[in-house]
Length: 69
Ligand SMILES: [Zn+2]
Image (cartoon, rainbow, N blue to C red; front, side):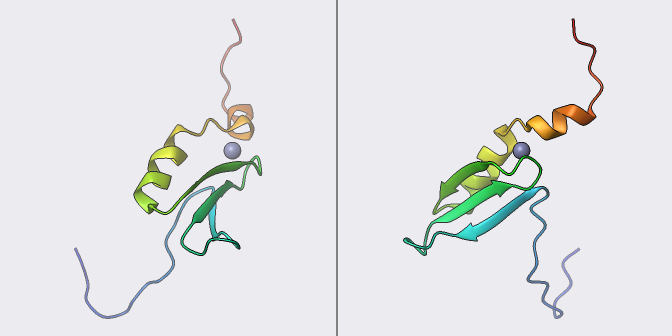
């Protein structure tokens, strides 16, 4: 369902925070808000989506109770 009108500019990137590179304005940097580590930088947002999915967050792993065997 795509409602026209009422533009929502804010997109939810989950735990990732995206900001533009200071030296290269076309380059978008992605940083994890959980572990505060740099994840990726790319001019392609879809590539950031991909790399963010690959990010194994050390902070997130603390919450999941996986038995250490
Ligand atoms: Zn993380």
